[in-house]
Image (cartoon, rainbow, N blue to C red; front, side):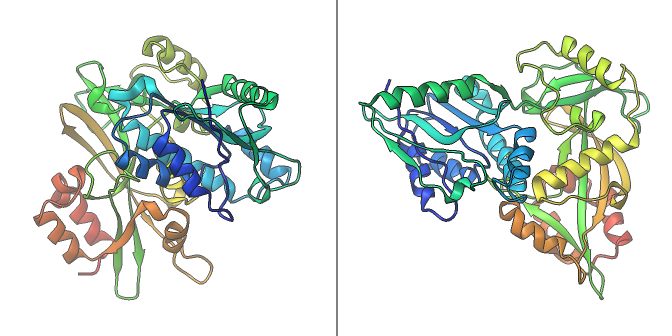
Length: 403
């Protein structure tokens, strides 16, 4: 098997072309890097052009503990942690859109051991080459020059073995979501168990299963009133309802219950949900029929804001609005709706931070008249569209959205 290795690269180098070329022309590719900050855009562009999916694509990230070690050791600045998290979320989302058809052909994994080098490896017909960058103590990898090695040298085999060793010390980035059971009192979510995060419509779950979701409606205040801040859904920030305007939302997962970093509850994706639930219940103290503490919903909302918008907020800034139970495509969804006033003052402009940290989030301000026009033209996502007058319009009036 012939392989090509191409350095992840940094913004100082024209590496995006190299990365995109690898994604466009490879049959099989494995990328190993730190933040993979250019990967979401390159991956999406490659998927638009390629006639078929890769026979195999693996993407390796350092786990959160190793990210903190790299920062603490002065190898890279603190803001790389934000890039790392944004890339993991976006890349996983892009590939999850292909999970049903190509589940066995892709994986996103966390490396559990400290990385010694970064790069990528790909099968490109009969041609092969290696290009990689070793990580050196105290030196930012984006300022280092990659090493090129041809396949007819002994070093190629050694680097390939090192590459395989890194992959062998990885674990899949898999989130486990909470599910509940339908109850007479639909204003309360009652816990049932956990399931691996896949498309809700593809799940084989109990007939009366309920999925808990937090919804956040950001807004900004001005002298004349407030503007609602919503997202335009694109292929880089959503897997469905592309082109619609939506709030920010996420399913409640195991990390929100035990306050661990996403991905810290490790169970194989193929594990049976019942034993996984038993293991998680022993860790978290939850039991079937339990009512979730309010802080769990706030943690989920806070995590969603951090992952999708790059904002770290205090939990008490979230204003609880309403709980909504709603049917969608045969599934019952339980929504906890929060409102969040974004800061725009002399010290911080949080809307500006979102534009800087998450340009692919596609967030913008809306007046009430614009929102009503979108509603009339069926441009809002499913929850906003179906609950516009009963749930969201009273909220718009409460926060005094400008007409």
